[in-house]
Image (cartoon, rainbow, N blue to C red; front, side, top):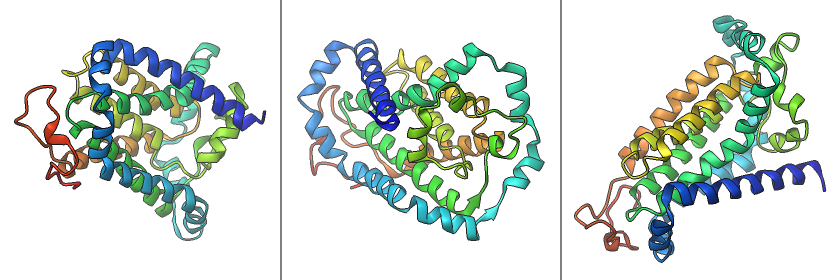
Length: 287
C-alpha cells in the first residue's frame, strides 16, 4: 500500500469511529432512528447548497495548480510583509511549548481531529427536523473554500517553516512523515494566507455555539476541538499568526453570509414536522 493510501485509510477509519461514537453520544439513538426516514428528503431539500459546495471544491481541485502559477507570477508577494509584522512569533511558540506529548496531540488534531470536525456537523444537522442549519453549514463551507481560493490566488506567501527553517521545525512531518503524502495532495507551501484549517474549524465552532440548544453536548467538544486546530496550525509551524487572524475573519464572515443567504423555511411547523422542507416547498434564498 502506498503512503498516500495508508494515511487516507487511517484517516477514514479514525473519522468513521469518531462519527459513530459522537453520533450516539451527541445526537442520540432515538433522534438518529427518527431522522433516518427523512434523510433523502433533507438531502434533496439541501441540493442547491450541496451543489454550490461541490462546485467550489471541484474548481479548487481542478484549478489549484494553475491558480498557483497565477499567484506566483501576479499575486501580492506577502511573505516579507507578514514576517515584518509578527517576526518570530511562531518560532517562540515552538521554543516555549514544544514537547513530545503536545506534538503528538496537535499532529493528531491537525489531520484526524480536523477531518472529524468538518464531517460530524453534517451528520448532526442532517438529523434535525428542518434543513436550515444544514444548508447554512454547506454554504459556509463553500464560502470558506471559495473566498480562500481567491485569496490564495491574490496573495502569495510562504509559511514560517519555509521562511525560518533554522528556527521553526515542521513538527507534523517530523512526527508523522507519511502524512506528507496526504497533505501534498490538498495543499502547497504557499497556500498559507488565510489559514483554511483555521477558518473552517472556527466556522464549525461557531455553528456549535449557535446550535447549543439542539446539541448542548457538542458545543464544548466542537469549540475545544476547533481551537485546538487553530493552535495546531502555528504550533506545527505551518501558518503564521497573521494567517490565523485572517482565518478567524473569514470564518465569521462566511457564517454571517451563510445566515444572510439561507433563509429558514416552514417556521410554523411543530417540532419533528418537516413537511415544509420537502422538495419544492420552500422559498429560501438558495432556491
